[in-house]
Image (cartoon, rainbow, N blue to C red; front, side):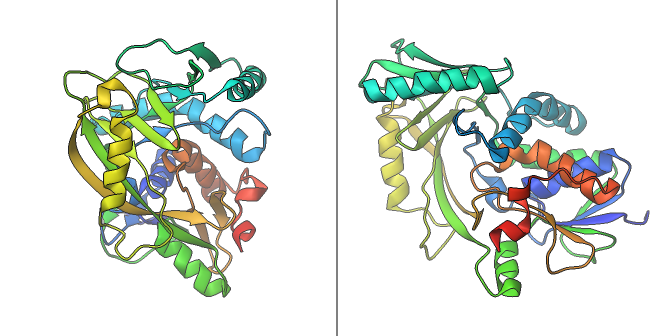
Length: 348
């Protein structure tokens, strides 16, 4: 077996995106995860790659925009390498607007998108078009943006794993780390950093989600709907990912309960196509949220020759293509282009 140049701890979306980026540059990468790929939060079912609103611009929003704009090419290449479909499509998003004040605010954000989104996507206020996939909107108006995309998280993570193997990397459930080590261990990693720091660096937030199958309606190419904090994300197979709850207090991170029942009931009221939709899967998992609410990327503050890629709460898959590149830059080339607010110290 060839010697290992670096090790990634964790086979979720961020760990594997870093591993793939390093393998593309010729490094022999070992990924170690006792549970295997897509076992944690990256094994979910919703997959909304949605931008922050185009206002009050900052380095986090700029980083996210760059990642979302590179996503189409990135995931197409992962599909080519792996022979597996990550389920990516840039299908856009609809958001209902409650009243005249919300319409005015959305129109101001449209002007912000014109300035900030480089002419590569739009945020527009439109009249609600009607039809089975139109969400109820008290104002009769919707936001339609063309930057939002979707993928299937579980399928995308497994596609990353297969792409890494094609590039010569290895994934194992045990073994010893060699070379520089990138810690992409999600909630367990946040707990370890908190223990080492003697204070909370982040925490796990449970999310429950469901896959619905509309009756008599093919939503596979429809835009996402985001209404009252609820995402409805159509997938290529005709199912619709519904999510998610955000639970700080929980006993079992993998259990679904009445909170998901309530979420499904709300989803069935979003638009006519989802009324009476069949539940085909229920899912729950715990997602890593850094104390700063920004991603946690950069040199590990408590380990030598080690780095962190963690804290991708709700935006993990959207940022994954760029997270992989900036960590590969740092670890393999010593080039540091990580935003200051993303550094681990910002959460300590």
